[in-house]
Image (cartoon, rainbow, N blue to C red; front, side):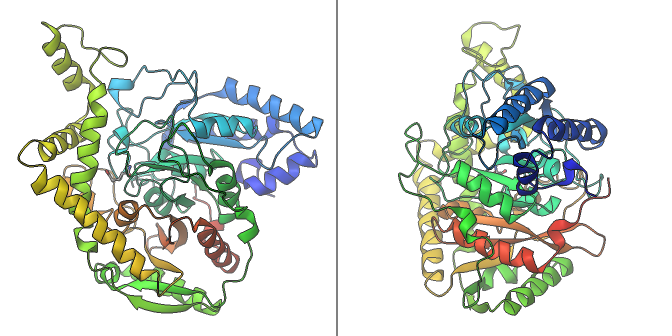
Length: 486
Ligand code: GLN
């Protein structure tokens, strides 16, 4: 018999609505699991037991009254860069270490309206800049599958908490891979929706033209429930697209026979890890068994993705982070000599090394005389990458590729080598550059038992196709059912 904390949202929803368990019991089970494992993992920045139990009691009242929805009473963890009114939103930075959100992000309002139960906020790389959750001011999160390994980042706490049974589902944000990479490294299922599908209102901005909020769950079914909740127009976010989204759950269990998956030559030529190559080959066999055909294709500008991203993302970051000056909110240095000195000391004390590196890169790229040489050129590459994907999707329904070039690496292994760290995102960054939806699903394990994920990429607003493909894959495989030996 599975413990309550091991069950999926769809299973718990059934138990809740048939009154076999109460949300308060489910929530207690999750809180006990957090208590038992958090010292090892450090997935959370803030755990909120009182709030969770209060929300669970309210969910139980809704269930009794017959006004419950599919996610009522389900516990969720939220990345520490989203505003939950009354809770700290630190972005894992010293500069926001004591910042309490004065309002709810739109996604959080939707979570409250659905009657979900907020367990707390999850650990991340500082301001979501990183691939390993090691740059957090609060210290690193550990991979539940192997405590010496990083969980991936920047939404490492969100992925680790779901993998470890500390939360049923979670929210992450993805600017260059931050949902998909940790999902892959922790063997859970995560999606970065199309840019504009999910409101960014109340998400602390990193690189606004790339940032997107998305859910992390144990499987495609729970992800579909979460997409139904999160996707939709929001007038508070000017890039939110006013359109009708389908019922994502109607794509679960739908046959995928006759679909075509693209294999981009450039992605596969970067692959020299035997475990990742084997997992990709195995996945191809599973899809072929389900009646999917494969076509090789080319995304010729892919190789410029990382270089262009590390102009665009830091440029936007340097502008977005200008607001942390110690004047209105956040950390302020105590001893200073005049206003300029106050700014300098506040920012020197408040930001960590990686964030400072991004601010310097971005400020340089945007400065007069360099703007055309760097920023404008990067913007042109971005367009070319988008065009590459557009022509690729004329020959296939979706793209299958790895999430990362290797399985999870050791804590400390890449933290002093930013270029190596940046290269982790070679397969995920182009998806953000083009604004496409990308999903990470458990694909298997390395010879040493570490998770390896698969990435599926679809045309704009075709999240439903990703749900359909992932659900078909998960009906045939059991990687997503395995749990870490904590
Ligand atoms: N690792 C990438 C970066 O540091 C992407 C992070 C993200 O998606 N937030 O910018």
